[in-house]
Amino acid sequence: MQKVFEELTTAFRKNEGVLHEEQYKQIVTKHTTLLEDPETIFILLQASGYPITQSNDEHYRLETCFTSHKEQRYCVIDIETNGSKPGTSQVIEIGAVMLQNGEVIDRFETFVECAFLPEYITKITGIEPTDLIGAPTRKEALTALRHFMGDAVFVAHNANFDYSFLNASFDRFGLGHIGNPKLCTIDLARRTFESERYGLAYLIDFLEIETATHHRAFSDAVCAAKVMEKSLKTLPEYVNSADELLRFSVSSKKERRVKKEKKSE
Image (tube, rainbow, N blue to C red; front, side, top):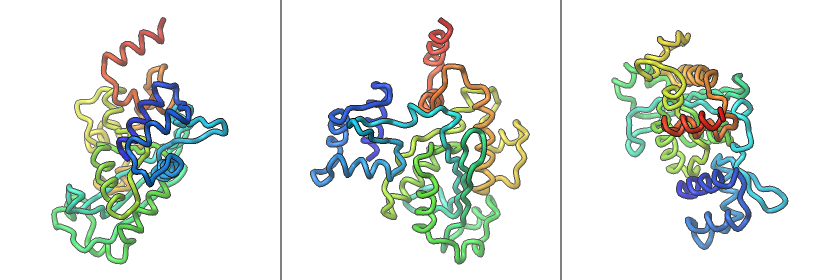
């Protein structure tokens, strides 16, 4: 499905956020089996968190292109794991906050049942094996997270790690792929304010963020949300929609200069 997400997003961006039915079908049928018709794929896309909608006149819309970055919902996530590789490790704690209009509108926090917790992980996180006894199973916790995320933008500090680890975990338990658009607060911070370093621990001190404890999922999710809030205050004027924010967060200096020059013309 990753190819479908990528090609659809590229096509939507080339067509101001709207695709005709034939354009949509041409993309999705390239990467699906004969048993998966375009209507079924549409249902799977929505279930994955991909922000696509269908209008009555047989047009498809990418909603992030039409939602202001302020009104967009952002699910800021952090996970703790018992190792670095999803093939041999698992999530042991998940923390998330849902942001909209600069406010936390919901929160999610859970331990995850785990039979093996290395001592060095306990030293880093403070999580003890006894904390995980009787916790929700991986499938239960991941299913609850999938429901919580909806079609919000997936946000994390060093998002590639959390996104790829959770994506592999979702796939393992039959929950499909994550289709939510992804935003990394490190990438966004680098483009909005100067700092010697952009690791979360450094930014917590640099931005004087109050935190309960570092290397715990919910606390780190809250801190990442505060880093994002700092970035959103210094966005250039040409960033209006949520999709423009996503594109800005991975833009080059040249792209940003060209955008700024066009805005000033």
